[in-house]
Length: 237
Image (cartoon, rainbow, N blue to C red):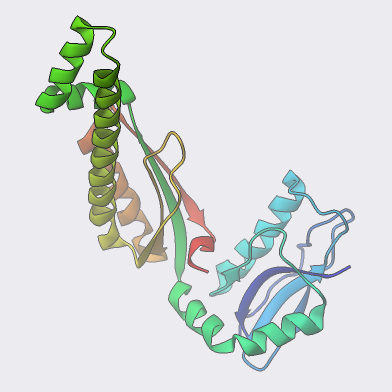
């Protein structure tokens, strides 16, 4: 059957888990696996577990309850150990690492930011600022059969797009990092040139959200900022 893991806490965490249950149908009963310094909140792992809405919600409900009372390291949905004994062994083996991480995330939440830019606006900027792009563009218009010039134009535009995305990405993260404890890059999506997570202290959450709002306002309507949070600090565990 296996042991399903929700989170790891310090041994002194209050662990107020009454009234909530775990994943599966019927919902699994929560229990703990303890060592001297650490505690893992677990349940029996249901067979053929899938990321259904009810199970994902149950998984996060457990983590939200734990985080409301203190530091907790949230596990990703679907993490299953062989049994309780294996979980206890891992807690002992990686004790120092888990305790350091618990100290790092104590009192913090994760915020995930995605930023996209209107492609037409970016291309107009490149055309306006790059003399070489304008030259190649004029040549391909005058000579539609100029294959080499078309290839060169496409490559140059691709390079310019990536360079400008990278500058904007670095600038945005640098501006927002002042109100965050740590940042973590996430692989950009096809649409978003920036996808990053920020570990933010609870008392600085409003300041961080305001900083994101100000950054979005300064960049204008051609940029699309999407902020999600507060979340369990998955990216920093």
